[in-house]
Length: 584
Image (cartoon, rainbow, N blue to C red; front, top):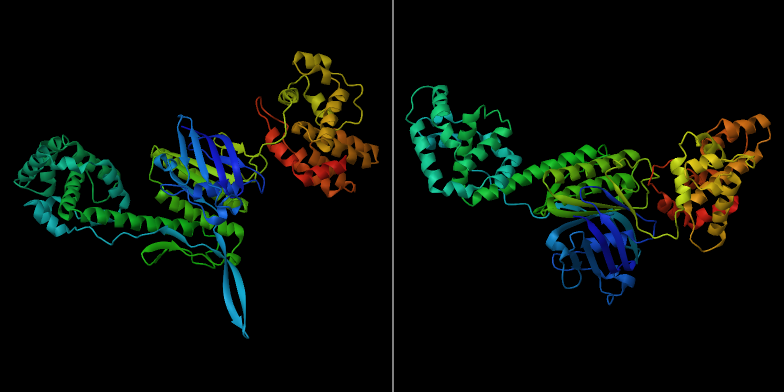
């Protein structure tokens, strides 16, 4: 099941938009859009979902007009349409939703001085409430001496003290999920267990002697009770030192069953409190392990009232990146607790855009680990990462390329030229590689005599471009259209044009013939050519380097790849367009 489309109406900066996305579960879905496009409005739409409707703050209505009623709808590949508006939320029928966004908020304190009042403002990080209500403190009613006595004559010889097991929330969590305790109320179970205990307690000898007898005479009977066997197998799988062999596992299972029966409704309360203690410890260790300011701030979950919360330093006391990684991890831990359904949506709104490389790797690690955890549970999570950073251009996006799905939200006025893409796909062919690299992909001062008609025909390339002169007529027509007309353009042609023009401008500045020859023949890559020119004291305008965001776009593409859309988004930027206009 994929999410085909998301449609948003009247939420913050979005009046109405239909996003055709085809979001894939258990893979990072990265939605890229420039600043000001409406990514935060997208996140607010999901963050405003309540269990039975969508509920906006007044400031989040489109144009802050509460008459503009909000709607959020999803269409799935199953054919279902899920809708949230003022009166309903069918999204909640299928999905748990959690949004991670910027956690800073401005605060103003009114102060008086010499009879005058003034407001003092600060930027605070919102307290993270990990667990809103801590469960009642209930312990397990277990006493080893009493348990041995209740077992019977041989309890002291056979039963181990299992007090330690009541500290392991994971054990009880698995038992609760996998064992059907109602089966133990069946007559067959009760008669079998009572009879087995009676026979065991009639045996004489050492503990080991009796365990040997149980192995032969009782264990086969125990194994016919499916839920009893399941309980013993779960206990064995944890490798507790108190459970040394198969007989110990069944005797421990009997002890746990006895505790549950004795405690009645209090047993579940004890489990809940144990899960809370486990969760608190996990949150504490996780936050401590990634805390980049541990020398200055002891940041850890604390009990306040009846809640478990994380209080943060003032926003100005730590960097944006440090703040973002800490609050992200805390909120990710919270989302893990909130996700109960099989299908979940996790929206992350630009929270990672200001992290350094190391913290960004940390961010990606925790997202990947979370996805793997959900997959192990046979659940589906749709991580939606909203960003203005294009993964194709930023090396610190290290997600496995085969696992991420990148979507560009903003529609651009572009169209790829398939013949140009085909030339890029074929550039590595031995018959043309050296020639096209020299005469097409980089500036060459004299191309009028070049003719690759035979080679282009053989590879079924556009024969009109077999002469580079003709090819660059096409390129410069596209550049003129981009700079002077409001029309559809081919971004890859602009990339070619910018690359060739900058190399030509720099080449013309070089006076020494040997250096000119080296520039053309010995130095690979536009950026390397600029550095070479600098090394021989040629002044390179900073614009030439800044435009690397265009000309450094990789033109080594595999069949079917097309980088037109991300390139087109950059070409729409007014400043970039002006810089290109200047070099021409």
